Length: 150
Image (tube, rainbow, N blue to C red; front, side):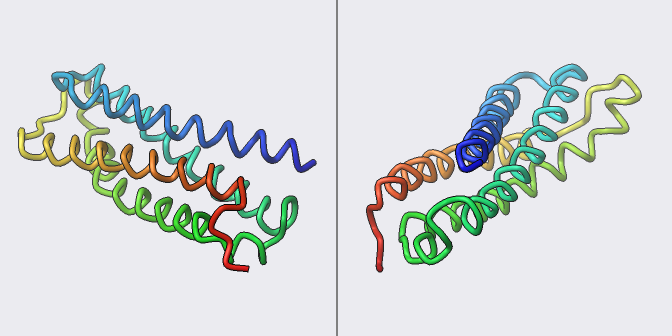
């Protein structure tokens, strides 16, 4: 069972990073109705996979792996949790913006977005990707038992 949950956790994490990478590429394009629709879908995948990563990860911590005592005394794990929360917070603005485009997209129109807003979205998504990269490093350190306080 532990291997199954490890697999599910990794698949959800890969889907999260892939969705974020898709957003990163798409937000650089001229905003058309097609690009806006793809951004909405990518953001939906990002949110769903983030939820899956969180739930499956917590199940692994408390039921399937080394136990909560190991994880909550491991600095890279704590950093990983903090980075996950930070990525979630940084994703609020892009998600809210993308959701505001739904009516225009449903009407077959490209959303009207000023360049400053697009630049803020690009910056936020870029920062999310950078944080995800550091999170992956923390995951590798944690898996090797590096940074344990106990």
